[in-house]
Length: 330
Image (cartoon, rainbow, N blue to C red; front, side):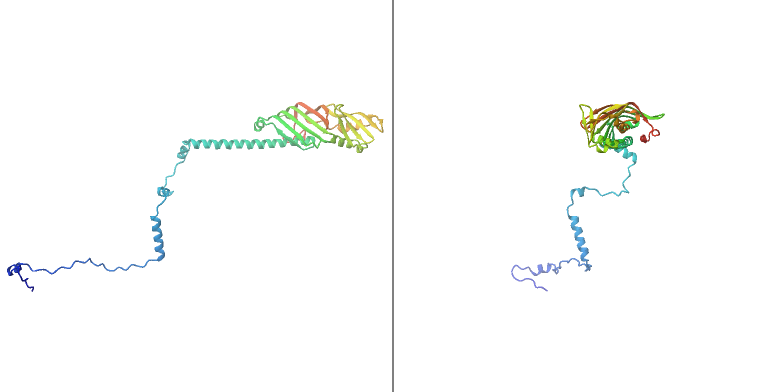
């Protein structure tokens, strides 16, 4: 038992006796200790993957990526009906304008393609006809206006131009043909395949071609022909055959070209021209005669390089292929 304090000022026994007994100090309460939990050891690879996913999630995303809503599966999106698509298309002026431009461009391309093909095919047909008649290569072209498709559908052709290679016309060497046809109308009637309003042909016969033709026409003297020259002022040509010299004047006889002998000299003597004239007539008889469609020679001119003959016909009739095999394909 504890003794009361002694000394002055100490409480007396009565006061001491009245004081309640002191309680022993209570120690502070400690938090309850939870039981130990065993944590399983994590896989190092899984730990690295978790850290990477965490860092990516924490990284700031671009504004476009944050603003993009989650994609809706195609199966969940409502399908737009065909009438709705058409109405939406027609309500957009830009779309309508683009559609019109595309349609017009496709139509224009189709017309150009048809124009070029039809024109090329027609050129081939006409070239083949002329080549068959003159026995030389030929090229043809149709007038630019009106468009060829329009001419083809109406079967009326305003202008056709034909040019040969200049190798020959029939048996005449060195002849070149330039042919102009106007107002060609194709219409099947009777023995005619159509009509041509105007036919004008210019035939140029070079001196080299005249020389070759005369050489073939004169059996004895022909091999001695060395040159052919022209005299435009006199309208004559001169054939030099060594010992003999023939001067002839190209003229039109009965709608055909003819070489009329003006003089014939040999060994300095004048010889009768009748000895050569029949041979020259035989050589030129079929050169410009019996052309189809009634084409006949109108005039002849002597030039510095040879002889030019103009042939023509008006309101000519186009023969059918049965009458002239050269006109097949019309």
